[in-house]
Length: 245
Ligand code: NAD
Image (cartoon, rainbow, N blue to C red; front, side, top):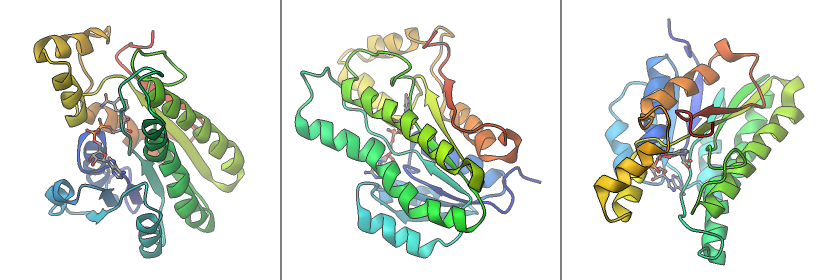
């Protein structure tokens, strides 16, 4: 018996990193998963996995979101994972960097929740899991100005949804990882120039002395998606190797 037997999941940013590990973990626990991403080529690598249905979906595109909502009538778990790191201080951030960060990292969640929350309510309940970060209202991190601002907004959105719909069977939580070894982290390390030093610096941020693996974060996400965590709602859950201590 899986912890998510019979559950239907919609997940964004499933092609790589934490999203990819999470959709694999969801199906291992018995769920059927609509795994979506803007990168169809990478998403295609998941299409042979039993229980995974792949769909191209750009979280900034209302038509993509509406098309998926038309197709999927019942949804028990919505995992809003899509996010983008703009690196820089406030003065480095142009207005278009600011707007794009807000669009991908937070307005996307508004869009997805607007489309799928009514279906959950019609079904008597549901479970929304949003991806935030320790780089948010939890911790000031250099060169992550707009990113951290959007991730703090994710915490606010999460608590607001949890409060508004708690009596209608909806839970809403967000996950706040520290540094996780994913393809985009590797790109950020490359961008440092000296890759060895870049990696060492990222590892040094986490007092436990290692980067998170996407699978570590996926285990927490499955727990939050399952009934084992039924008392948890409105929470911003840190999983960061002690970075925010
Ligand atoms: P990643 O950054 O390596 O990959 C992101 C995925 O999102 C890609 O598959 C990409 O195609 C997809 N994507 C980008 N724009 C999209 C859009 N407009 N519509 C749909 N999909 C889109 O993956 P990751 O590092 O695991 O990050 C996933 C989430 O976890 C993000 O929200 C990120 O902010 C958050 N996070 C990551 C870390 C970390 O250290 N990696 C730490 C804290 C939080």
